[in-house]
Image (cartoon, rainbow, N blue to C red; front, side, top):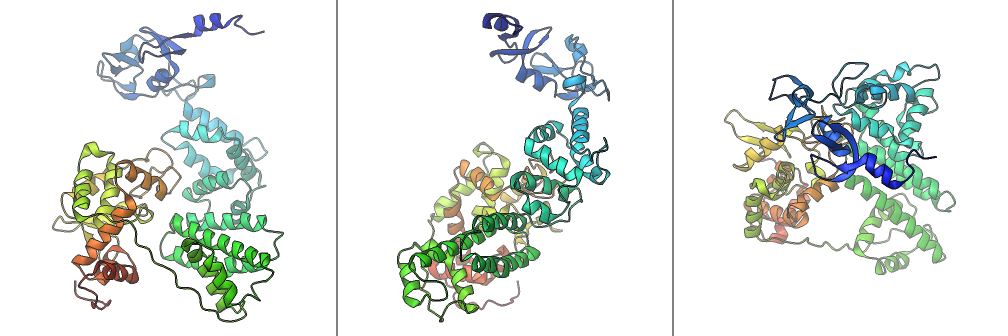
Length: 492
């Protein structure tokens, strides 16, 4: 039988109005000033600093004139000291602080069957325990899939290899744990998006196990796509778009082979008329996604002849006037326009036409100053000078980074993400830029058009990390005067 006979009894004993936030709800504690709700209690029990009343550096759960003060100065009798380590902090079950609770949970889930944590996973345990916010790690361990993976890893049923994590059915949870293992050195470093694509491909091939054209798709993916992705990953980190584009190519190839089967033919029998018919009923983006597969099939002799492929249309993106671009540049300098990291990322788009997928790969080392104090950013070779006052904005962004309070505290990324050792996802950064009113695609297109009108396309390409063909095409569309500038080395 419930300890409370009626709802009114429960509300009378445990519900009240919080003296700090004024909201009515379940009370978590009663300080000398009155009832405190759960939210305000957790905030108070996690506030550390120097008490303005006595000067002690300790937990500051009390309040005086809306200023945080220590429990002694506030007259709070509740003891916040951990029974194990003595730290003054937010206490959980057994009167243990969050970090001691985290240590117990890790010892439980990393038990190798002997009653002790697996010694081979000591570095993982130390890395998780060292997180500045143990509450984040406790929330992670609360997830059943995370606990399952740790137990499998500790008992040896999950080998400590990239291939084992790639094949694990709980791929999202496995990807997060794999990032932690790479951060602490228990797994060799590998490109995140290459690993992501390999895991996706393993699952996708499993879904298509009953398809007659599966061998052709598997050969295309393993002999053509993966080697190209691995070569690119050796030169520089892959972007999410590289992985998603490869997945689109694979899926479009599957759809094409399925369509051929519906037409009563196969890849080995299709002729020019069949290829033209498919292109006639599909959209330009679908045609572009299939081109890699058709080219591979032609070059490897899987097509019965060497058909001609229809020319793909090149569409221009939306445009901004130069006047509007300058207005947006002035906006990113206004602190009231949005968070610092959003304005800094938008600045890189507006000034240098950089996409979010490349901005997230920048590190703090990519922003530097020469002996004369000129701020430089390394987007290509040589580094590009950043004009004032935008140089100061980027220096602030470098020195005041966010997402540095969990597993990414030692990361060198200019825009750190929440995953261990990883930068922010380009989609997340693009959303932040869009939230402050900057239309990303139009901004990048207009910025690049303006840049190639001011300097030769090959110079812009080399300095900002673009391909020569990209800038040459843009300058032709813009009607620039550098069309005959040879794409070779020139004195800077």
